[in-house]
Image 1 (cartoon, helix red, strand yellow):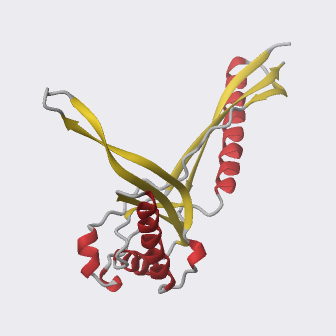
Image 2 (cartoon, helix red, strand yellow):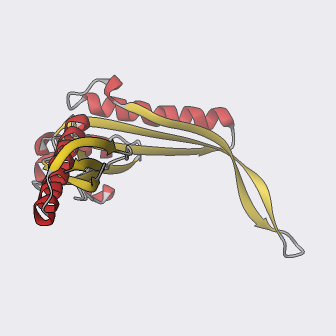
Image 3 (cartoon, helix red, strand yellow):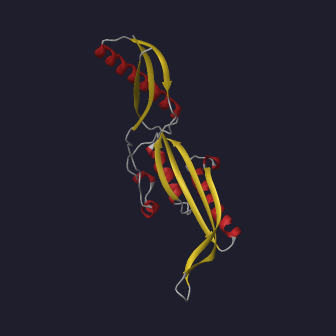
Length: 217
């Protein structure tokens, strides 16, 4: 049986409809319980802040938690560097998701910045239904591969037959807009939500591929 093997590439352009605010808290203390309590107090400030703009406390999700010992390098009399115990560190990574809405984003960021939690922030624009985008990519890849195969067969004077095999390796596709929403926290502390600029993120461009084998006659 003669065959033709073609790689199909699927592409999709999607408008973001979901905003994800990532928050990180790092608390240091000489005592373990002090680090834990300090981090929890800052999280409570964040929870209180988001409730003022319509969220529930439970909307602030914990992505990771890490409590560890902290060591610092010190130079000894002989010039050598040695590690010295410096207490404990507690790290929390959290996220807050909301429908794409510039006004609500501005209100939320202002509330977080004014909470006193001193959390590091980053913002991503993505989609609520990534599975739908993945399905669109695979459909596009299939159509792309068949079109290529038909062109190759026509140019070679053969006929495209039955599909024999599909080879697809699952990939972790990034479905995030490349746009960056950046701000200075100290400026935000004094800026009301109404003073925040309108922000239109770039569309999300994604791609995926699969390999198809057809019989040729």
